[in-house]
Image (cartoon, rainbow, N blue to C red):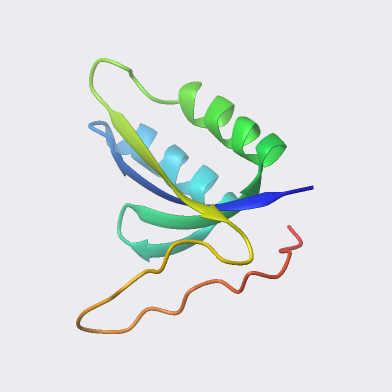
Length: 95
């Protein structure tokens, strides 16, 4: 099953929804910043993640951004300045 790397960021207005979305994101990826996650997902995993997030957020008040960084094992490069963050390996992740 082909996997792709995605950068997901969110802005959630309500603290309760924020906690729930954060939990879903942690289940699927690695936190880079407070509301930014890096996820290596198959299409099925991406669909599951998006369904879970859409069931939580208020479409009129919240936003979630997904950026497709490309297929594994060679996704787009990520450049960082300042304190280094560890990136997930391109190997499969058992959840």
